[in-house]
Image (cartoon, rainbow, N blue to C red; front, side):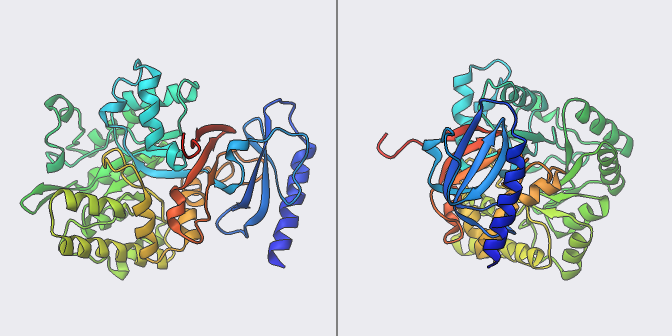
Amino acid sequence: MMKRVALVVWLATAGCASNQRPATSDRWLLTGTRLYVAPDAPPLDNAWVLVSDGKIEAVGSDAPPVGIRREAACGDGVITAGFQNSHVHFTDPAFAGAASRPRDELQAPLSQMTTRFGFTTVVDTGSDPANTGALRQRIERGELQGPAILTVGSPLYPENGIPFYLRALPPEVLRQLPQPASAEEARAIIRQGFETGAQGTKLFVATPQGQGEIRRMAPDVARAAADETHQRGGLVMVHPTDPDGVSTAVQAGADIIVHTTIDSPKMEWSAELVGQLVARHVSVVPTLQLWGYELAKAEVPTPVRDRLVAGAERQLAAFSSAGGQVLFGTDVGYMTDLDPTQEYVLMAHAGLTPMQILASLTTAPAARWSAAERRGRVKPGFDADLVVLDGDPATDVRRFTGVKCTIRAGKALFVREPAGH
């Protein structure tokens, strides 16, 4: 009964949208075996989405409109809103020289890292701002087929606090990494970042130096950076390193914690800390897959590796159970394993349902980035950012990576070739 009522509501809404159809030839129909209009709404079976001029014009079930071009290669799958990866980097050499590099040299790595897995929006959490800006401009001009890119520009580190795992970077790159010594210096760096296209700020409030040493950003510097970011309408993303770093982030005014934590003997997030995160509406990007990747690279024995990853899973479970907002993200770009399947598996192992994972990919990031009125749901009037999967993720979360087509603003960015081609 509830599904039928929901269907009637959606069809009624679709009819209203159809009566105000824009005059455009860019109008086509996508059909699917199932449509998840949103994680918190009943799915529609034998569904269709009518796309017009980059927007969703109508949504329905059963008999689709006739006489409209169909996107045949993307039909007969499971349709959802476009995904957001809330933690990526464009630091791989494949993206260097984005302003002038030939299109064909950029398109393949861009597709392989993003649209192949359904990502219509990504958040660059630290890269060369000029290069990422050039990549974003070429996507928006239509020279490249890629996702919308939100960026925090170049992250801020504690004074004399570059983490040990970045010290192998070229000296000229290391000299460019901001390490503000004062609140005013931090504010100036933030202002410059927003002037060059940043939509947020990333703070490394605690950085491992090796030999068990952790260097911490001065609280007044972190607070000033957060305040300047908020004054400019941006979000503050924080790399915390350990539970104390999470606490520092909360006190500084963070909006998003970009990792769970394994770099400390103190693995658990206390109930008090979790409560503070939820009460202050701080989101968390778990990056669980990253930990196994990093620990394997460091040749940590499997039993120790499993114990540390399980600790991060418990952090996610406690935060999610308390009502915290989870944002999907992998740290791909730093992590060379492009396939996010394991992230979905680990999130499910931590207790998240398939629909909670779908929310972390769609409605939650749209809300976090103040875009909930135009993306994150398959709804008339919203941007036609869509993913077509070849199976239902409600039965197996691995199917989140079985992407047939990725569509942004009504344009197919990725269409998987049929088997055997």
